[in-house]
Length: 176
Image (tube, rainbow, N blue to C red; front, side, top):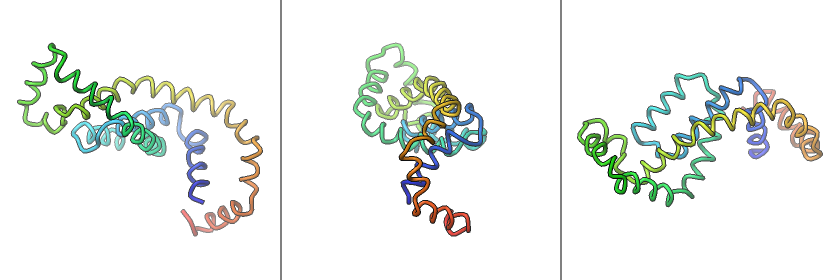
């Protein structure tokens, strides 16, 4: 039942509730958190933005999960990119020295190649992720959602006795 609930919750992110901007904003913030290490100052600032902005929390956690898996695979690239920014770009060496001497800046862990590479990559991808996911939500709500509900597999799952039992128990308050 976990997988059915997960699929239902993901589809609910696209289908219901908040505006496409709020869903896309949540997905963008979740991707920032998922692509870069969480235990940094910038990670705390992104979580703060999630808490104060009116974004879809389901989209935040969906993006966090997907991007954390992607980040694990992309760590070699993040290391290479961070190394290039820290060592091979001569124009930035003064910035790194100045930042290192500011008392709070080392909390960002900018001197770690993976942290710097992943966060800069996440920042570069933030705008395309926002507009791409916003477009996807709008498209889903206009046409894709109706097609998904017409799929045979969707109908079979929706009408199965196991799913009906689950919905009945859930609606009685047995499952949340």
